[in-house]
Image (cartoon, rainbow, N blue to C red):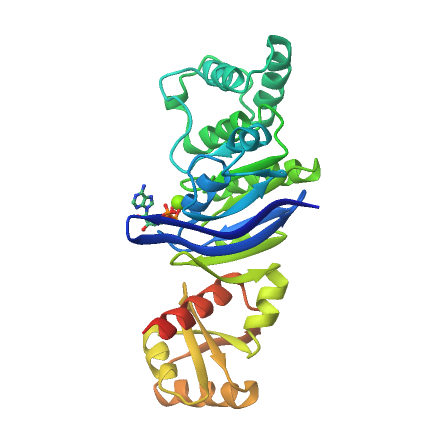
Length: 311
Ligand SMILES: Nc1ncnc2c1ncn2[C@@H]1O[C@H](COP(=O)(O)OP(=O)(O)OP(=O)(O)O)[C@@H](O)[C@H]1O
Ligand SMILES: [Mg+2]
């Protein structure tokens, strides 16, 4: 069964089309990644799916309810952590949880029980009286997640829940997302961290309001990256990059920190040529290795293809 079914969903703001006839399905209990550059249309889509924004055309069913004709029913089944901060900074941790409990109409006893759970999950026990604004980013995000799932929704929308959170806290945050999923909760999450997207069961990539790719991380890699990628580390990455870009056996290049990823048409020729070219220029070659493409490689490739198509 699908938790979310999206059909030709479209949103115009005046003449501008922010979301353009998108279609996708999210299976019950899965972690679904919604990726795309700034302004691609992710938050707008989420706001429509949460029943907060009417679509211009097209529709979706969330938890079996239609977002346009039954937005109130949709809201009963979902939790939503918005991209902009969803907590009251000047309230205490305890007061924020109480506030959300009231919004969701929880009885005092249920709220008490769920509050205990949230404080434990977010590791905020003992900080109930802290002013929310004084918590660091990572704790705030965990409290925000706790508040979004206080009423045990079956479907949760998380809009960039880990932006501004350090790597360790992000990992902890993803443990929480995995726990929710293990409990059968469907999670739709947006992120700009592509290593986080690797944890998703399925992913879609949206660009300028249109979906340009979808599938599991493994499928996306297999489908789009058929040519070998070599990782090259050397003493002058910038010069090497400029050199590689001119070669006929090079399909694509990109810099990843201190190394260059070179997509090549044929591995043996490429290896031989890399050694030769760098030696010619007196650039020290530290290592060259074939790598499994990352989602970052896939998305750079796909977005590059899109911009070439648009040009
Ligand atoms: N209420 C609005 N009125 C007019 N334009 C809007 C409105 N809301 C969003 N937009 C525009 O729609 C486009 C998509 O915005 P959206 O916030 O959905 O992108 P996003 O993918 O969430 O980006 P980000 O990664 O930066 O959060 C943007 O160009 C934005 O400026
Ligand atoms: Mg957004």
